[in-house]
Length: 270
Image (cartoon, rainbow, N blue to C red; front, top):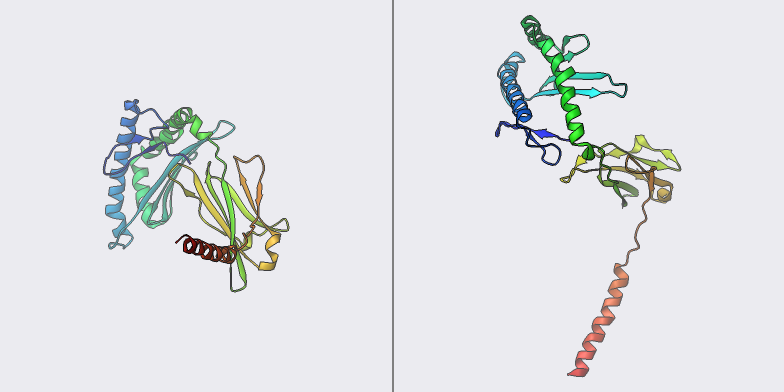
C-alpha cells in the first residue's frame, strides 16, 4: 500500500516518490514514462470507442486498469492485468493460461482483436512475470525502511446519547501499515452485525485513520469495549468510553463569587 511513483497527464512524466527511490536513475524512470504514456494513449483509444459501443455517448466515462505482480512466500510469481469501463469489469488476462477473459459482448470485440494481433499475450506475460517482478524487488530494496515501518494507532472512544440511544464511536488515528481490525465487543462477544465501519483513509503524513460505531442502550455502556488489532501492537488493545463529569455548573458557581469579590476589592481601594 506504499506509493513508489506517480504519473499524470499534465506533466506526462513518471517520477519517484523522493523518500522512497533514487531519482538519479534516469534510465529507469525514462522507461516508466514511456510505458505510462503508452498506457495513456491506450486509454484515449478505449474512451473514444467504448461509449458508443455501450450506447453511452453522453456524459463522462472512466477507464481503469489494474496491473501488478506478487512474490509469494514460496518464491512463486503471481501476475494480474485487469480492465474496467465505468466501474464494471471489461477484460482480464490470465498469465498462467495466456488467455484473455471478456466480461461481455463488447469486451469480446477487443479480446478477438488482441488474440488476432498475436503478441499481446506474450508481451503481458513478459511484463508481469519479468519486468514487474524486477521492479518490485528493486522498490522493496530501496524502500525497505518505509515498507517495514510500524506506527501505533492513537485510539479514542467517545459516546453521544440521543432519544434513549447511546452511540459509541471508536477512532484509530495515525497508524501504519494500512491493515487494521477494529471491532466492538459486548461482554467479550464480537458485535460485527451491529457495527458501522468507516473507511481506512490516508493522512498527509502517510499514516491512516478509521473508525467504528455502534448504537447501544445507555445502561449497557460498561459492557462494551472497542478491540483494535494492528501490526504495531504487541497484542490487541481494548478501549472503553469513560464519560467526563459535567463541570460547567460548578465552574459557573465559582466564577460568580470571584467576580463579586473582585468588584468589592476595587470598591474598597477606590
